[in-house]
Image 1 (tube, helix red, strand yellow):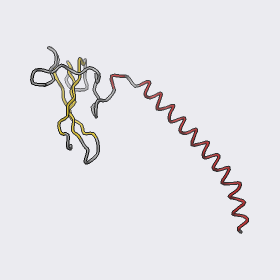
Image 2 (cartoon, helix red, strand yellow):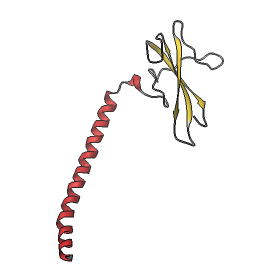
Image 3 (cartoon, one colour):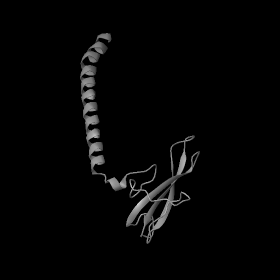
Image 4 (cartoon, one colour):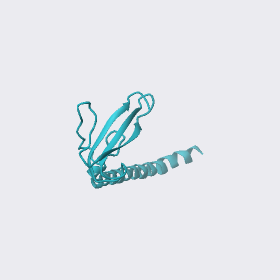
Length: 122
């Protein structure tokens, strides 16, 4: 019986190890290619700031003398909140869009905003 175990170890496991190693390399390459294609096709306007999905994450709105974000004439700020991180390092953020639309998902957008509401939890 011992010779059968050694024989199966020598043939079966080495070919299986080679096949699994090859499959692992192919899988990693495929996942990398899909991830790269996803990143390339994702529009810049959909990029996140913290946990917010802002329309214009690279164009933050101006602030007034009190440090509050303000929208240009004809636009209004639509705000929502989200949490990021895991306990005990959670933070709550406020996210905002200056839009002519009726809610934070409807444009046209002119600028975005984001700030920390609670740095110690959600």
